[in-house]
Length: 609
Image (tube, rainbow, N blue to C red; front, side):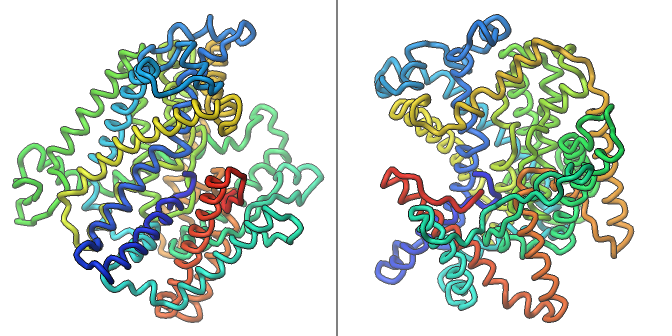
């Protein structure tokens, strides 16, 4: 799952709504209410995030990769394999033979017991980690949903899809026009994929080399795409944010040209985009906390008893009441318990307490920044590749000082740090926003989200391990499982162990520059109403996802600007269903092509990337 709004979840919800329509017409007593459809959407989103491309699809190939592929040439056996936590990895050669070559059955007592220990421990870790995100979201919910009135662009489609009993979206002709255009493009390109004699109406990304002479060739190949779903999502993003995204895409390209023109040999990776992005995300977290300081003070007063709280209802000194999914005291104590569990989990894996405490503080800071950015920006993608707490700490502290035990645990957490595209925390907060918009009660949401985490984790482990035993990971399985997901953390760990380094001064410095520039952008944005640049656009514009979709956001920004300029807010609201139709149409037909490929056992058209 590499896009903000999971296409499989929207397609599944669309199918459930279709069945629900028939039930409402013929067996009304069995039809689902909007609150139940919302719960279906939220549980599917959380479960898909856990099992998706940036979590379990990375973790499962990692479990046995080091033991399976350790050779005298790569020296893994001498460097770290004996020190990997046995309760978190697979080293049994029989189990690995079946998983990688597909010649042994999975469903035997011995095989299932062999996998049970790491699967259950990792499920516990994932559940606790995501519960910590839930506690943070409960603490900031009122500020970010009721006080600041952020736009939450991602929820627009699921919110309108779940409307019952009379769904106005399905009665809107503009929605069906957008659905038809996007669906027809995906259908035609799917047929072109199977029968290349037909011309392609390309919407997926392609790259162009514009400049061939130095220093302009440092700009590299320029990607261009016209994904209907990304244009649809971009229409609901505030204008200053969508403008900032594509503007800073070009800013970074010109920074490359500047570096080449100046011949900065002492800074070979200038402008250090990943490092500046990491600093930018940390700044977004700090700025979000600073903007919420009064609310957080109110929460702290409630926790220590200066404000009263009856159950989940907060009553302040002024008599104000607020219904929360969990009491502030419960959320705070829950977050403390989560941090204790996570740090002890790593301690028993061989890491140091203070290092892992810093690790998870930084991880949750990045999570807060992503969640805030999704609530305010709603960008179609957000990945932050290779800039998690593992990279931040190794750059600033140095691999030599951190030592083997900490570096091993950093590598074990590659599945939550490689990229952040399927991050579950934004879905939790968006769920709270949908609950608030639909006037649902908060009581069921905590249980539903936690249950989805546990079931999604267990189901994901089962599906991915079963695939290995059926197909053989070295024979027919998904190729990135071997070429990227399995090998990346251990290859990096070997490099850390073979050539330990002290603090990386340029990288650390550019993280500070990214933090400073993001803070300055926010300062000017708060001081000047006309200021066009949003700090979130600066931080996210370095990512792979923004490189792929900048042109889509430019198109949606231009269309929205023209509509508001010449048609006003009323015209903007009337045309909005067309862009929801673009999203739904591409997701629906794209999902049908995927299902056809699974049933027929053949490659089919993928509408994304």
